[in-house]
Image (tube, rainbow, N blue to C red; front, side):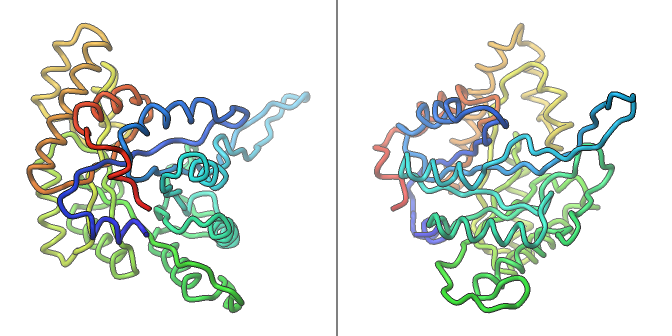
Length: 328
């Protein structure tokens, strides 16, 4: 069953999913497996696996000159997706991104996923490179997630990117996309950002996962505007428990979302990171309970730097047997 069908059929059952990072280049999978081991007992519905584009670094030569080298610090998203699906029997959703990939790179990625029996993907543009002031597409690549969706649609219809027919097309991909309750950092305004989401839906996106937020009211207002604009696909709220004092300034800068005044005032009362972590668990639990009360029965967690907090939230919120919530 693909994720979109599951979201449509789940009814009033409540559950969660979470996102993980592939290991850094040169590291093993032990830490990643520990993260999943700590959360699997609560029956996650699926696991998202991020993709990080290649970036450029500068190395000094013996003659003092600098050479520019392209590196990927977190390779292996497709391989990790296959390993997790095999090891845990939990559906996986790897990210497929424009950033750092050509059309041919994307095509080979889709083929690899199809060989592994993975048919759910999250389609994203990806972040701009650290050294770039604005997003720069890879040569023979894409500048927008909508263009990437078009390629996947063509693949689903049985044609390679050059128009050659696929002799034995496999299972079609179910595509999710991202959305932004407080708008994408590059969008002129929220209304235009919602129009971009509508275009993704028109291109076949089956559901959307939000950027993290700490103010549920902003999420509800976003969903209302999206529905008024004609967006009908499920919108999954995504959360990241507040975990460190430094995040009071880092989170708004990194994720372009506001910290509500009520939360910020409580953070200022915290004496150390342990206090901030406890506060974050409490705040996120209340967020989820409120989302449940408003009919949002599936929530998504970002686990980076917050695995233990997510585990504590799962203990508080999800008590039914794991097998009742996984997709088969």
